[in-house]
Amino acid sequence: MSTTALVHPFRRNRRPRVRLFNAYLLNVTFESRQGDQRSALGGGDSIAEAIAAARGELPLGVEWTLARWRHVFGE
Image (cartoon, rainbow, N blue to C red; front, side):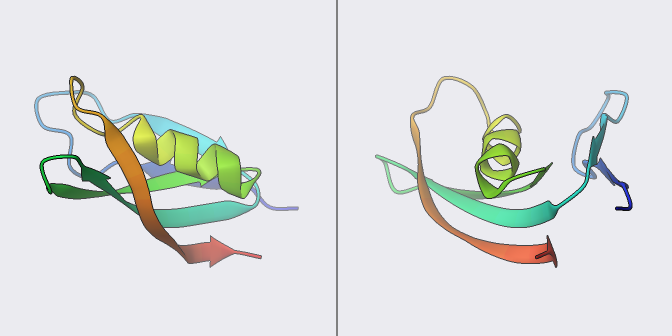
């Protein structure tokens, strides 16, 4: 199985983080109670891992709820 690297393109003034994963790359959309929406890319060996990785890219201090996700790469 091949391994794919994901670099988050929207981090400013920080060194990009590279994550290796084997199965899934998802575009995940989250919503806050205030109605804000944010999308983030997440990769992982399972859908749950990919969603967790995307959640880790969201701003802190806000309670984000999963709204939807779609496959960018993977099974």
